[in-house]
Image (cartoon, rainbow, N blue to C red; front, top):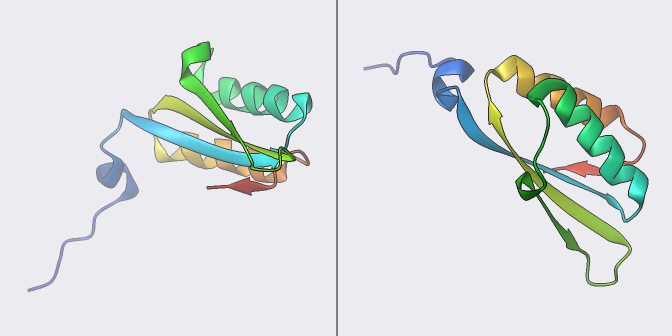
Amino acid sequence: MTKPNVTSEELFNFPCDYPIKVMGKDCPELYDELRLIIERYAGRLHHNQITSKNSSKGSYISYTVRIVATSKRQIDSINKELIENPFVDYIL
């Protein structure tokens, strides 16, 4: 018996709570750019949607931004812009 093909839309069961995790050097520009990019696709963020954690030496910071994702296209668009941003080192 073969498994039926499952689309990414079905896998995520949109709309759904979706965490976006980003890491980069600890600078104000990273936070500003991160907000700008995500708000372009997910609407205005409330401060309680964003959490941060500094690295042990304090050089890097990771942000987790929780959004209500509405489609795979939305997630892909956010990730594409984040990857292209010079302040972003990693997307987890």
